[in-house]
Length: 154
Picture (tube, rainbow, N blue to C red):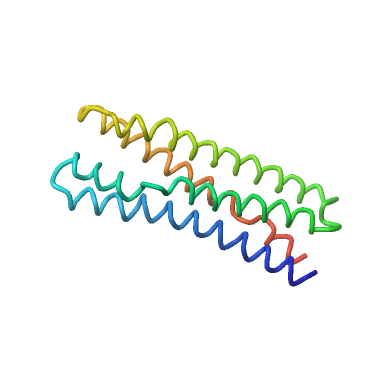
């Protein structure tokens, strides 16, 4: 049973790290470098649209892995479930995770189509909104990270 728990914990931590790393790389490296490479905002938008194509379902699949493994770890935690601090951390982490998934979904299904169909004058507004959401997701992603580690040592 300990091997299953450690495997789930590894999956949970790695999936969270991949999500955090992908968001951080996109915001801090990909977008700024691509923006400086392309001569026009239109070319930059064309490139970012191409790169992002099909990513939404992969991200949501990763979120599903994070969520399912987190819930499984919660139920495998045994006596720690009675610990009020553990329960608080689990609830807080779940709320932050749901907010992050909700923000990602909003950006994917509401803001992204609006950005793709935006006029050249509107594009900077959508770029700023995406940067803001990306920063929030990175901060939430850090908070969503595995809280189980703190209880592993106990």
